[in-house]
Amino acid sequence: MTNEITINNDRFTLYLSEEQIQKRVKELAARINEDYRGKVPIFIGILNGSFIFFSDLVREISLDCEVDFLKLSSYGDAKISSGQVTLLKDLNCQVEGRDIVVVEDIIDSGLSIDFMKKLVMRENPASFRVVTLLLKKSVAKVNFPIDYVGFEIPPEFVIGYGLDYAQKVRNLKSIYRLAPTEK
Ligand code: IMP
Ligand code: MG
Image 1 (cartoon, protein in one colour):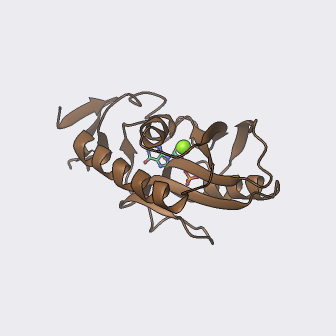
Image 2: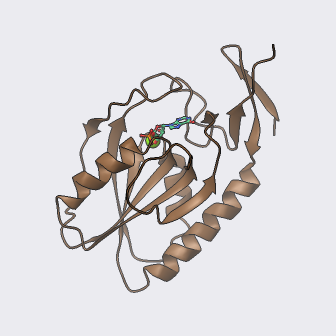
Image 3: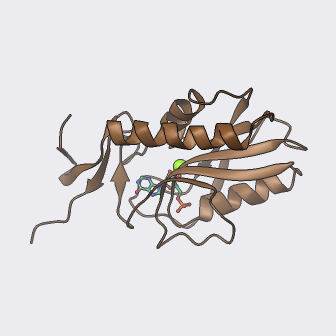
């Protein structure tokens, strides 16, 4: 495992190792298995960022469950949010009366998850919960609880484990953060 990577002259340092992430994913899944005992939740992944976390998480789920995906875009190729959320692919499942668990890679401004919640609630689910691997709590403006949080992190740009930098580096097994620039 490398401790440092450079992309487009930006230096990133190791932040959360593969082992730390995998341990936390198992802990989150164990809580979900407990909380949803006897139910058949639908896990909804928000593409593209959550695809790796999503697939690791659902493989630790021992319940009967279904999966679906929705694609949102807010970042484009930039390192900061555009403030605009666009629906690029809608859900295909029937939400009404179902227990919905939305799976996010990271909640930053909270705009995407807010958009997502409104979209799902219109279809009258039996319940709605959110699991996110990362939460930038100091930035996120959401007026509902984020039920399962992997790691609370400072408001820094992070990459790897599904998170991209201009669409690249999603395939890294660990999470890296942007290193401060040297003056
Ligand atoms: P929000 O709408 O600002 O909460 O941002 C949500 C989406 O922006 C996430 O699902 C990610 O795909 C992306 N994002 C937010 N912060 C980062 C980051 O630090 N690195 C890479 N992508 C990020
Ligand atoms: Mg995302």
